[in-house]
Image (cartoon, rainbow, N blue to C red; front, top):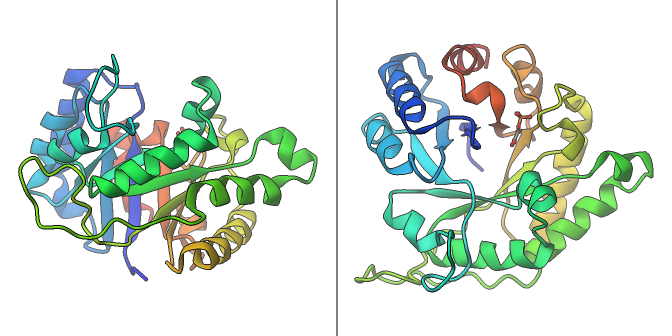
Amino acid sequence: MSNKIYLFANWKMYLDYDESNILANAIADKKKSIPKSVKMAIFPSALALYTVGQALRDVGISIGAQNTHWIDKGGYTGEVSAVMYKEAGCQYALVGHSERRHLFHETNHEVRQKIEAILLAGLTPVICVGETEQERQNNKTESAIEIQIRAALQNLVWPKAKPRTEPFYGSGTGNRELIIAYEPVWAIGTGQACDPQEARRMHELIKKQVVALTGVSPIILYGGSVKPENIAQYLKNPNINGVLVGSASANFESWMKIISNI
Ligand code: PEP
């Protein structure tokens, strides 16, 4: 298990091309104030991903895709595949984010197809799971999460490591790294963060299920209204390996405060 603190920044569609590059360069300039224990990754818009990656490459900050398609190449207007993100320098890919599930009606089946393509492309998936407010009120929190995780990971076949060839489609790294982001839907973008003890309980449950299904001990992040004021309460818990942050990561001052408050 990693001793790193994962600080993952989902910039969503908050920043345009220039704003993304300005923020990436500002973060790179502050590299010295980022503790060595932090593993940081930024998920910019697809448009800014390459230049943001260039700005961050030399300071050890990774980049990731916010969404991927499961087919490598073809007539899929508007889509970008996992292998294309890999070629553009990504290390990670978000999959199953609640905004994809709820605003774009992404199903558990599609999430699973994306996870397989992400692994095959040699990226690490950041699999987002979370219950809705209604599920929580109806005491269905645990079962909602279990269903999402089972659909994502049951009988998963890990791609074998192959030497990189050109094109290197389908050359999984053989690296069995899984990141799960526990993101209660009701906590995303609402300012209503999950109680840290409850997040910890959910992380324990998720960990048990992922280990039982895959034999791999996952890195588990909490996401949902993380701010400079509450970050430390989450990271106190040993089962919370880090955070996935939306709005507070797309602003230089609040992201720097989050880093200094860990
Ligand atoms: C997210 O979208 O992954 C997220 C956690 O958003 P926010 O931090 O804005 O709640």
